Length: 577
Image (cartoon, rainbow, N blue to C red; front, side, top):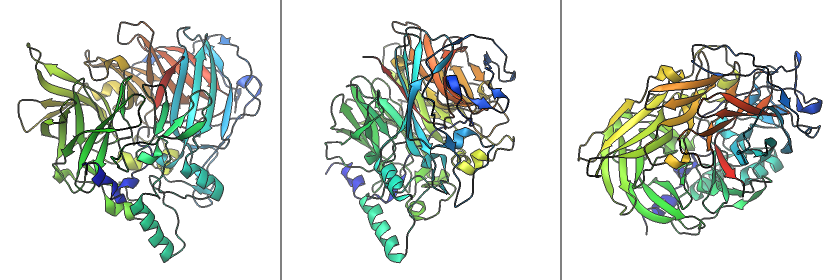
């Protein structure tokens, strides 16, 4: 039996489901002719935000003639505020935390500014789009049923769309009007003791785990587009043009496993992921060739701490190595079995168990380094690369992440109640670019340092992307969500320069952008030659795809949706053809 097969026989831990990343916001308004949105002052005036130091929080007016586009369909979706057990959402809540009540929409987007003509392809963003069933509202950002957003760019124009992903969890909830699978913080309600026993049995078999793929979206090397979450069953193939759910992505191997990293490493030729082993604490490292559905076992990393593996939402790789993190925020069966969530949900904080970073050779599957590091909490790794000596021998691995100063409270800050009840206080926990250094000299200890002054990006740092040509290689720039304080959620876009130790920041008052995704210009040589695209939910209830020049971090254009858009998580780019 392969080492990964053991993890498939105990699914009690495996309901660590759906989403886990970052998170921003918007508000609502009614569509009016021409694709604009009505606000309390009538048709909203366009305010162009500029790249600026965080201290300068003024949004400047920059008149730019709008480029007319064909009017979208007159009936645009509206948003609905989720509420718990009969309570209605307040009218003043930001639209980023409200459900879209219409399952799908498509239409031309009104443009402000001028899109580069080389931008030819489709931007996709995945994330929660529905947080309520009738009068029942979900608890947590990560509970929402998945919704894909598409913006297709061609010839200087943009067409937008959204659609719910047709997971089994979503279809069952839509048909029954209630939660039918175990989500991040939601569990199906039981009618009595026998019903509860049946639920436990389905939990151990894995059948009650959600397949709500509301976290990531990736383009595989063969062109297929895959939406994912942390349950293996929550992997769906979608059509990037129509947003139709084609079907489940079925693995054809016998490696088993009920959970995996929500963020695989995907290149044109291969797919890497980690499968936690929840019986014999450890991780299996697996890979898959482009065009295949068969994962291949590469090697195993045994955990050095306990009582369970550390949560692994993402991980980095280099050209020759896979970095396997083991943080002290660990999976917890006891919390999983509870009907009501704890502040750490499916996890438990064990700083006494130690924090570790392991390195496995891709070619041999052998662990070549395993070091203890200071405690850390991270959802997302940015990148990793190899340090070499004068003779080209690898001496260390450097791995960067969005690190929350070993503060687990970020999970509970993402409860929808907390996100909707902002009072202007500065409650967003601090975050930084955490830089690990893992030596290859046999040392038992590694380093964790701050890569640049966190005040450069407002002490907020999450939801990151880089130039894909630099994955696993030395790099200079990262694009992420930062903070303009006081705030309760990341509300800026930031371009971090890891050489000069500086950051450029985009901020628009009251708006909360989602992950900025870097798209390189075809034929580009310089690392930051391209654009960064982010979906933004604005204070006035509008929503738009923001396009920034990645070099200057100045706004180039925005493509406006005729309705409010809830916050989403992660993105990918599908080039035309």
